[in-house]
Length: 246
Image (cartoon, rainbow, N blue to C red; front, side):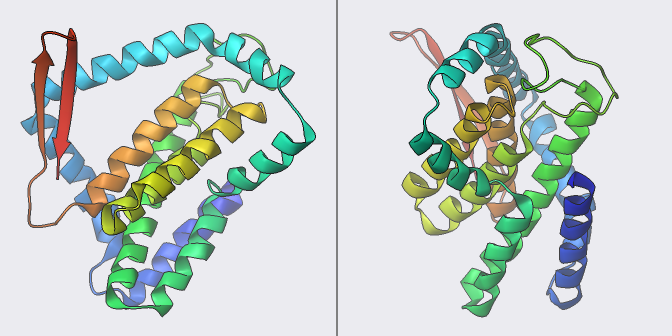
C-alpha cells in the first residue's frame, strides 16, 4: 500500500510538472535540498543548538513512549475511535493531494499554494521515508520495546509519515492564508490519532511534525529572500529561544 502511495504521488507530481510554470521536479530534487543545506550551513551554530534540543526532546519522549501508549489504550471509546478516524485521514498523502487538486480550479494564488502543498508533501514525505528505512523502528502495535530499532530492516515507525504530511500541508496553508489556528490543531490531532490508533510512538509523531513544519515553511518562503535563523537567551526564564525567519 505504501509503495502504491509513493507511485501515485510521483505520478501526480510528474503530471503537474508538465503544465507548471517552473519545473517542480527540479525544485524538489535539487532546489529544496540545496536550500535546506544553505540554511543549515549558513546558520550552523543555531542549527546545531536546534538539532540538539530536538534530539533531547525526542529522547525524553522515547523514555515515556510506553507510558503514553498505555494511556491512550486505556482511554479508548467509540466516540474517540470515530473522531480520530476522521483526523487520521488528514495525514493520508493520497487524500491530501486529491483535496489539494481542487485549489487548481480557483485563482492564481490558490494554484501557487496547491503547487507548494505538493512540493512540501513530496519533499517532507521523502525525508520521512528515508529516515524510516535507516532507523527501522518497530511500531508500538508490534512491540512494547520502545527502543526496538533495526536499521534497514524496513520497519517503518520512525518518524510518523501521516504526521509529516499533515504538518507539511498545514504549514503551507498557514503561511499563505494565516489560518495557523485552524491548520496546526488539525495536524496535531492527526498526530494524536496515530498514537491513539497504536500506529506510532509519541516520539515518532514529534519528529514527523518537525519535518513537516520545516519543509512546509521552506517551500512557502519567498524564492528571492533568504532564510535566517537566530537565537537568544532569556536569562530570567533560563531558556533558549530559536527563531527562524522567512
